[in-house]
Length: 132
Length: 190
Image (spheres, rainbow over the protein chains, first blue to last red):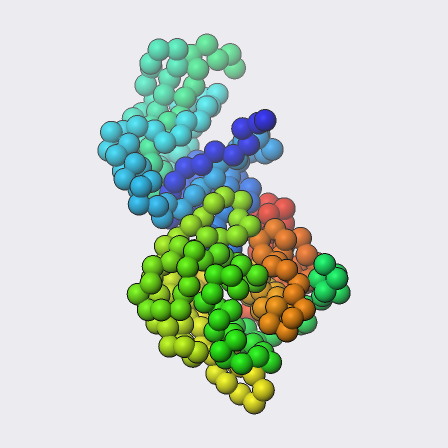
């Protein structure tokens, strides 16, 4: 058994695709639809066959309530690891990303929080002991 | 299944697209040699829908105001949406929503059969896929009502089928749009 796909709920799949590819830097992996259902995933260009992130349309009232509540608490809906958080922060900011927390030292890592424009906070982490 | 092995869809035909602002509508017309009453039942009855439609319904779509759960079949994740039938003038006009999409079915009797028209919203990138998918669904419906069932072909079953690939390309050409393929192809196009 493997972790192949994880999902984030997004309130607009086109907008999400734009953020996760053009701003965050992932690449589109699969995109097809059946009626109103659209299966849309992205992957990291560093791991093109690695875990996919499904950008799932949030048309579920229960999931909307949950998403809004954790967004308001500033809780991240997903977490991605980077080798250079400062460089990613600056690259993403130059593409218009809105950070709710700039790169900040915490126990054993440096983290930043960014608004994905589709209802979520995403956390970026760089491990403190990461050797470049 | 024997009928299924022999099945090859005809050329792309009977489809139009309409753009209204950012909203795209796919309009599909198919003439079937079955009565409007028979087709109406196939469009509304869960046991019939299960044999040909890209979704399952948990109750009949036959009456205005009924709340029905529609479950997408063959999608890689469970997708259920609740709909309310907004118009059900048997056996002529049926309207409900499927997720964010409006669905309008019109049945016109003509000599020896029914001219069936479907209006459905669709994302711009998926118009050819949708037209190819419905084309095959209508063939499956036709065979079902003729007593030579092919078995439902939706989702991955349809995409893997060579006829679907050809129809997708043909409709994309007709609509003069960039073709969106199944998963593997979509990844290559990105």
